[in-house]
Length: 638
Image (spheres, rainbow, N blue to C red):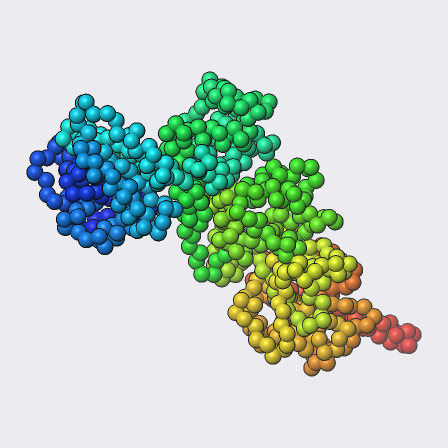
């Protein structure tokens, strides 16, 4: 025992890396035996000669049954002031108030001085520190139990976890004092129960309800025997036998038969089971479950559980991995109750019921494909997660944790794919990326919104029905490029005037779409100027797209016409987005944008292709003219 417990004069020895490390403070009147208790623990024997105050004591993690680092601090009213005492109280995790059963005055001062001082130091009676009462010098056999005398005090001061009768002289319950103190920190009672109502606290009910829903793999609102076994195995790494399951169900049925439906456990029964463990003093059982599912001592998901540390190299991007996509698809199928390959508002609400809130605003729901009722399709659902990864990775990872990804896999690190630097893709002329960004830039009135919304199948009528709150400058959809499915994220860049500068973010994309109104003679000049100012001589593929094409197409007031400009700068010829393409996510222009983004090293090939076609046309015309000339000469000579 002596070798395992290390006295230390330096507080620097205690540097809690774990939020559950324990700092135990012993307080009480002079002469009640605080120092004797600590010395008895350290030396495993009663010490007759004790100092006024014991040095700081450290119990290493490998000695503690719960693997926590424990610091024991002794307070001496003879050597320390009340200001120092208040500071010690504020730094402690758990406070042990020691009194002597042989001195009634020290017992009375527990309520007249010590407990009020603790509450005052911690800002009132609603503090989250645990308090233990140590009835020291309980070494006479003819003494009655002092615990019964403390029950009214425990009812008045809810922070008191327990009362321990102890004696340093006969080594009675010495180690138990510190065991209960550790337990009060590692497995605290107060967050779990509402003592006023004698039932689980609301925060505990909410946390356990999340665990119940995550364990309900078939989403029927009950836990079957198989689901209970899976829950037991995940929580405790020990299987639950059919006999044990039957015994648990019998206990619950004896309390309330309605807590079982068709021999399956209801949420109410699940909550009662954990309340029963707490009432029987088995807090650690409930905390083991809560911690296994990611909850901290405040019954919130731990920060490291929500957001693992991820380093993203410069030039790389983050996409959902295949593992993540499979998990999300399984989740979709689980909550698609009517099997229509869409999620209604109620189904979506049910899916995110284990999260603090629905991460998808009304705006985001209008950024992806949906059916005529506005319900997102499976394709829209996957694209919406992809959009979430691109715009707010932290939020996406947090909600994956709430949705139970970490239960099936180690952490959200398995949910992401970090792509290599885009420059390497260009150099090696290949890429494994699946998500590409396209920025749509053009003058006001060119039809950018209609173009972007057409990518998710929205018609003019659909767009007219949208409110301002439903507009988001992003749309995303899937495009088949060769044999692979790519996700093209289109961003409508809102530039108010030609003189307004583009931000670095607006200039950074995998492909640029420069949109102009072919019926407006001044529209192309805007796009040409943007190209020359920001994208000329860069490696970013650019495509000019003409909207409102038809009989009203006009020549552009610019030194080059669009096709001549593209030929001059070795760009692919302008694509046309006609009225027939509105609302058509399969329009050729979207395929070309996705292809250009996927194969940026072929930037000049598109120009060459158009050039060869142009030259072929000239050659064909020249050949026909030469043929007619030859025939005419021959006929005249004849």
